[in-house]
Structure formats: C-alpha cells, structure tokens
Image (cartoon, rainbow, N blue to C red; front, side, top):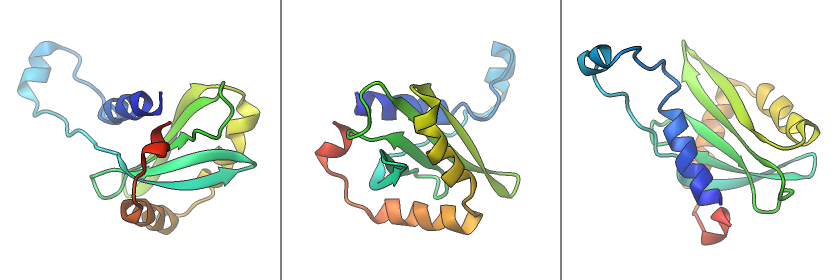
Length: 133
C-alpha cells in the first residue's frame, strides 16, 4: 500500500506545474521533470500519528506520508516543494482531519531552513523494507 502511495505521489509531484491545455501545446513544451522521492524515510510523530518523511531527487522537495503505525483508515500525504523563492505545502488523502491537522500545523510552522535540514536528514537516512509496509 505504501509503495503504491509513493509511486502515486511521485506522479502527482510531477503535476504541480500546470499541465498544457491541449496536445499541441504539450508537444511544443519540453517534458516536465519527474521527481523521485524515495530517499529516506525519517520517522516523525505529530500528536501521536506516525509519518514517514522522504526526500526528492530535485534536492529540495519533500514528501511526508502516513506511516505503517498510523491508523489503518488514514491514508494521507503532504508534499513540500520550492516555488517563487519559498516552500509551498500541499496535502491530500483520506481520513480524520483531526489526525492530519497536527502534522499540517507543524509543517506549516517550519521555516525554509527547517525544510532544507529535513530534506538533508531524509536524504541521509537508510531505507528499510518496513518503511513501505
């Protein structure tokens, strides 16, 4: 389940930039870069809910996914990415908003330097098979 979610996240991350409105425009524009966000994870808990943090290969973007110890009905992710000189936060998924709100609030309060440090920490982390359970 988690591996499928990470694959979906990588595909969604590539669509952050608006997609061309027509096939003619799509042919004229260069292909958008794809993100690989599998470095990590670093484990974090927000109000008792486990989240796994992965670094993306663009050197800046971060994906935060509910971990295997999270409630089974909570399937959610955040992507943090640089745009216009600062970091943007986007999240979506299913589950109780009361369980995702603490993570959103904590991530929203982070500075650009905090995001850079978190990316570096996730990049340095060694992935284990249990990260995707």
